[in-house]
Amino acid sequence: MKILGIETSCDETAVAIVTDKKKILSNLIFSQIDEHALYGGVVPEVAARSHMEHIKTLTKKALSEAGLSSFKELDAIAVTAGPGLIGGVMVGVMMAKAIAAVHSLPIYAINHLEGHALMPRMTNDIEFPYLLLLASGGHSQILAVKAVGDYICLGTTKDDAMGECFDKVAKLLGLGYPGGPAVEKLAAKSTNVKTAIEKFNLPKPLFGREGCDFSFSGLKTAMRKKIEALKSDANGDILDIDKIELLAAFQGTVGLVIKNRIENAIKEFRTIFPNVENPNLVVSGGVAANEYLRQVMQNTANENNFKFAAPPINLCTDNGVMIAWAGVERMGANMSADNLDFNVAPRWPLDNM
Ligand code: KG4
Ligand code: ZN
Image (cartoon, rainbow, N blue to C red; front, side, top):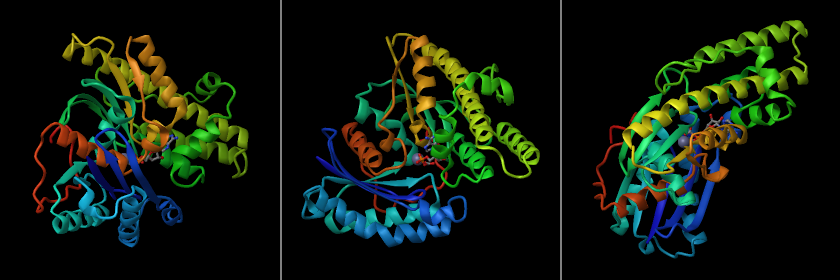
């Protein structure tokens, strides 16, 4: 079976073709980063226009790279129907509906978050149920994944998303967009993260509290104040070494918070699924590309007798493979395809599918 996946919910136009045997036949991503970098973040109108400009070429190319000569050779189409920036989502959905209508193919309206959530099942052969940290530019959730379409949300952010916090901190330091990779690169230059954490003593929101929720706005504000203080100390231009140590402290503090929240989630998971031996802790979403945070989670998993898994870095950030794969999973679970008149959903929580 060959499934086409289309993803246009944020700033990547992504199209892929995947088989039910977990083979990626094509995986194309057009990143709009350069177009949004000028503004320091994603501009919805610019994103929608760019998706319009690239979707047709990319879709045709995905077909030819997969060695297919017609859309008729596909078995189904899967497309992100939300959550995300509505203008972009509509571009992908219109394209998918047009192909499905013309070639009489079944179409699956996919929740973008389900795409991230199920990706590790394709890349790492993970069995249900598993514990998932889904951390991206728009979401920070801890979920118990019971089955396709069956998610229990154990915790979510009360304010900013984790990736958004990385992006905002990067912006304050003029590191460009997206901020996550830039912050990670500088923080990795620190030789002693523990000392950096102690030196800057940043707040660890919700650390030590019950539950699995996150909060990042206090940490973001504290970072703004530290950056302003460093700037005034150095007459406006922060020394590279100070940037490195501050970012190492920031990333390290996020790591401490993640560890604490996951430890609570692990306890809750064990209560919900007392008979699952050696369960998996899985991380997915753009922030999962962060090597330091992956290591934190690997350690947390080891300490608690969980196995740890994360998709390869290029499949952590937005891509078409995860959407196509969510389609494969829905077909495999005998879930019915969607009618062509389905609506897009700018907001669409995963535990309410
Ligand atoms: O999943 P994704 O590609 O798009 C959304 O659905 O939001 O995630 C993008 C987010 C951005 O906020 C970006 O800064 C963050 O993931 N990100 C990272 C890293 N790479 C991407 N955050 C921390 N460290 C990274 N290496
Ligand atoms: Zn995403």
